[in-house]
Length: 256
Ligand code: NAP
Image (cartoon, rainbow, N blue to C red; front, side, top):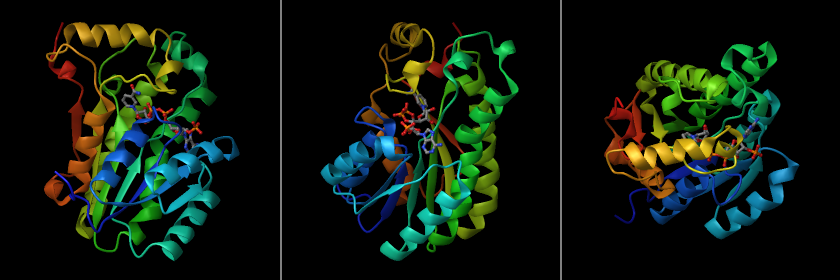
């Protein structure tokens, strides 16, 4: 399977640590021969992501808070200067206030709702607008979503609503950018124990339910998510756009 991304350059947003889904994706992209650029959100993560970037052989490690238009513009300028072109972009970013992932959804504050939407959904639109001009030969943009977009998962709450908007954005972006041969898709990953997931109250119960009831009777391995990302980023995925692909040990097909 080696070399599927040979001669491609990928930007991966959302590596926080070794447990991040974005880290598994970046690893798989390198294995397949891609040139890599990574971003981190703020000074707090800088040293960690630079260290991971060095291990992965990333050519660029840049700061970018996706809620700041000026930082997105800075990212575009740095990419333009350092890389000949861009072929793949991974948006692996989400955030909601912890209290909104533990109390009843009906109690979600206006500011908490808007924050989750801005970071977890609108940012895909902003990132796509930023990177599309750099994807001169077309390419693949992908994001990460979760079943909580379409089903009620306890405590996922405001993030489920943000993921529903994210999935709709995938379809609209696919329609807008398709004529430029830029494909836009989402991977709906099964639950994985990461820093973000730990913010959801009783997340461990979700992991247990999946292991017990999913057709494959186990949880999702980040490497499985990463291999699907390779498929979508590579020429093997050239006919796929506007899709939500489940990598969840089959859990989403179960009624009970
Ligand atoms: P993670 O390692 O915590 O990654 C989330 C990333 O989002 C972090 O790198 C975080 O940076 C970044 N981020 C948050 N606000 C940002 C901002 N304003 N600007 C730039 N970056 C920002 O957790 P993860 O589970 O891998 O999450 C990655 C994606 O997968 C998310 O979209 C998540 O919803 C999705 N997903 C996760 C699961 C799961 O069970 N883990 C399942 C399905 C989908 P900081 O750490 O610096 O805040």
